[in-house]
Image 1 (cartoon, rainbow, N blue to C red):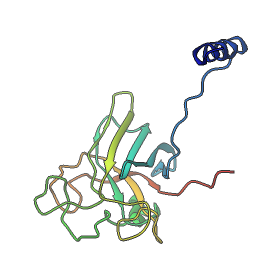
Image 2 (image 1 turned 180 degrees about the vertical axis):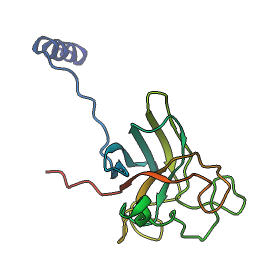
Image 3 (image 1 turned 135 degrees about the vertical axis):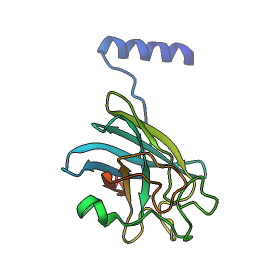
Length: 180
């Protein structure tokens, strides 16, 4: 039997048994389960290796429609009023805030997240300014880092947080548990 015939037979057998092909997905290298101020789960942020850098995937639900600022914060804590424990944005170079600020940008600055009228939002963005481990830009360093969503869009220019308003969701980045 030729290779294409073998594949056809295997697919037919799977169909007869009611099985579906499994899509493999790259495992996240760091995840942050996002919660609002009342502790309700509102989404997840996942970081994966992508080429020579990192990429961020965000999926949220239950947020107000519109644009929301999102940032990587320097401390892995969502404690305190307004998630104050997360500290400021990752900013090892001491720059000003904003992806469009001529004196910026913080390493934790990200594009805005669009949330639809169904209160669902998704974003996939490169993370060229942070690393997983090692150095002052590491997500998984000794004090960790947090992913924060704000109430309003980031104007991408104004220091220190782009007039993005209060922090409405937060999650601490964690490395995945070892595979068994």
